[in-house]
Length: 142
Image (cartoon, rainbow, N blue to C red):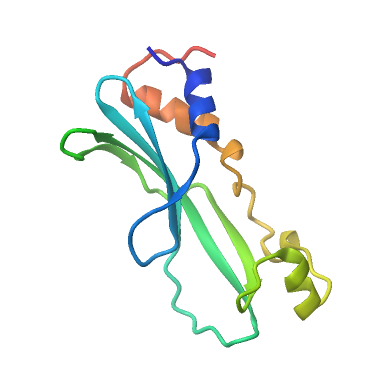
């Protein structure tokens, strides 16, 4: 049976892959015991603002996770609450922070995305693991 530490390691170490579809979405698929798959990913929140070429754009993303039956792909549990989110800024096709600064001046992403604190999976992996273990009704052991 998988414990919390092992699940956290799986969540952090599994590679993200682009999810099929039009939206900017990335997922990790993690095999969990008893025929279940844990999907951990993030996707861009829907934006209604028009983007002008050459202007800085801030994109908001949120983390989600789902527990699915690996045989029929039915969702058993999910968390799409948008509780954990982050943002990234870019200009045109430039997403590298140094290139953005070259174009729009000396900025720090933290100045644009002041509320963004969960852009690394390591920032939220323990919370995800705890919730998944609750879904599976497995006692949480650190």
